[in-house]
Image 1 (cartoon, rainbow, N blue to C red):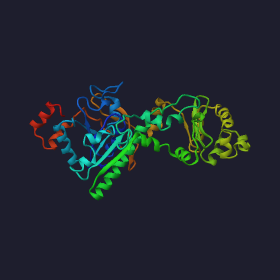
Image 2 (tube, one colour):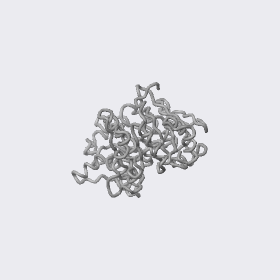
Image 3 (tube, rainbow, N blue to C red):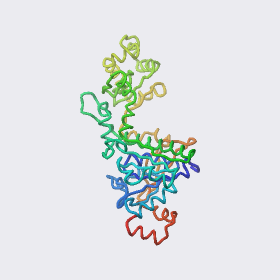
Length: 395
């Protein structure tokens, strides 16, 4: 793509593992120059996260979250490393980190410190619990947030042990929220000439994602609980049902969808049964309706029912990861890409964002500190000085 909306924006990313890199990769995909500041000796810990490695100091896990970025190994705790970093800050538009909440101030990554060097700089902080409360120094991860924010109490079948999501969605949502906040602050800095701190935390984002169950509880004292078959708490039918060979998710969120559904499964008696006459009645009689729908759907396989209702009601097959990725529809909408890598071409997912109808593309993140010499030269370091920084282990 010849022109991307964030071209010319330089972002320094003091990040590792998942949440921060996921958010900054969106920015890199959109054209920002994202420079990963990686700690010596091994850089981002996800470079060593298996089980699938791409040579020494690289892995498929790492590449998943770091396409389109540059790499600079830099020891921020040394005077020489700090000098390099401050020179970079002067050239940058934003600095982001996903460190523990008590670390940005200690490392001088906040606006109070960096704003003295570059008044327009935006400093985005992604932490577990925030920087301004009694948990600032606590380490934290996605699964902990799913536990404490109530997600695990809502996931899985009733009567079973608490369950987490199959994916680290709190990480990904927090990274995306950080990217949104950073972009908003960049717009403000462009107008005012003054940057600021932007803070998001895993816990805050997880809690915010409780959405309407939170509103119901806070105002009505209503406690949303797990329901069988991954059912919606208020709309029926909206859950998974059995077919001849598996499962299908049906979502009759409108009355017209319900009427189309019962006609399509050839169950006219459901249309005249008072127990299922409207949404309140169906909600009250959810358990009675489920086996009746199961019985009808088990006459055919999942593919038959998806084809029967395609475009008529909201319906989807329940697929495992392999079938989800091998789905021909995924190929047709161009959500897969081949990324060139020294260890061989890697098949990966594309960005979900389209610009003028075109998918964004990715390039592999280079080896650790591959961009150090070019960046140091740009900052005015001589060849001798660059060599000294390398020999000292600063970069």
